[in-house]
Amino acid sequence: MAIESNDGETVPTSDECYYEELASVEEIYLEETEEELRLELTSDTPQGECPAPALDTAFEWYREVQASLFRK
Image (cartoon, rainbow, N blue to C red; front, side, top):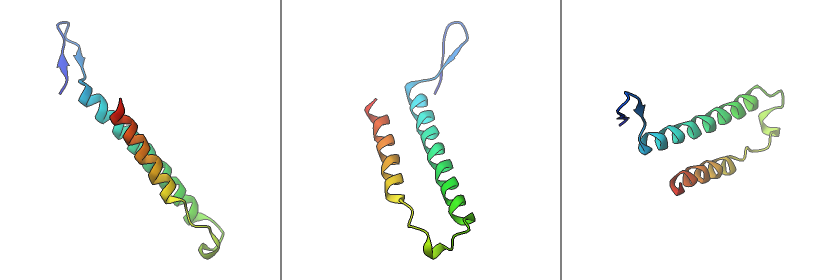
């Protein structure tokens, strides 16, 4: 919930800032994952010859970013 100051400005609370930052991180992660999958699907290389994507690494990075938000 935003707080309205005496001069009529709306100031976001720390909860709002936290959730906005979390949503931003999630959006970036989803965009990167979507791009990786699009590249894999549109690749000329047959799928059997493609190396398995490092989803564990990407997921671990995402979890580390989320954990860092809680530490702030």
